[in-house]
Length: 329
Image (tube, rainbow, N blue to C red):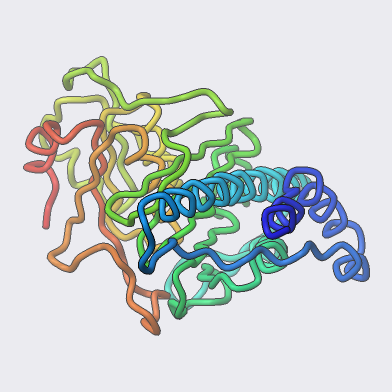
């Protein structure tokens, strides 16, 4: 009976697709199409003989497999729907400047709300941390980190490199990331469990095809990505060609898929990097925090609105020594 209930709860693909479609029709339908809340997930514990514990672990593994399928389906559907709507405003909407100097549009605020509503309906007990509304890291094991439009300047000026970034944190550290770039037709996702004790699917993907970081050594035939606040690197000869893209998540996932050997972001916020962190690690890359303060886990009740996460991302650990001397403290 319990197993039947769990599988009914996890009829994810059609149910989430129907819900997300309803979300973009009328707000009245939101309540009608609200999915059955997912069960709380915790690892099996307690005392038991080997056979009973093995059975519980197998059953828990089946639950987690469905959980990850639901996570992927939700992020695929909601970023597709949100991205389709945002493309109607691409290059046609003006932005205002927030207190922290970043830009925001009505499209950012709408997308933020739409993504929050979708996640809250499928995972009502999960926390949320978003660029536009929720900045305090919440209590609980699971938290979604959302950047509704990464690359708002590009979006408003008609440059087609901008994305929708969604990361899932477990106990304060990213374990799953999904980033969609609607104008480019690209959807990246990846799973990285680190020492969390979780299990499930592995690897990083671009449009469902596996990706890996580059095995190459630096040369002037290879790329390294900069941000606007790291251009001092260009003051002296650099071992790769340099590119500046204007979108933190794209800067980093291009390292994950092997297009670039590395990238640096001087002042990204948590919503800029949470998804890319999981994707890059899943693809075999290395992530270097450029401050003495630990990057993860995030701390409960801390406000992350203004905290930067300066980052160096490279294709492999041995490339840290090749690029780190060019980057300031």
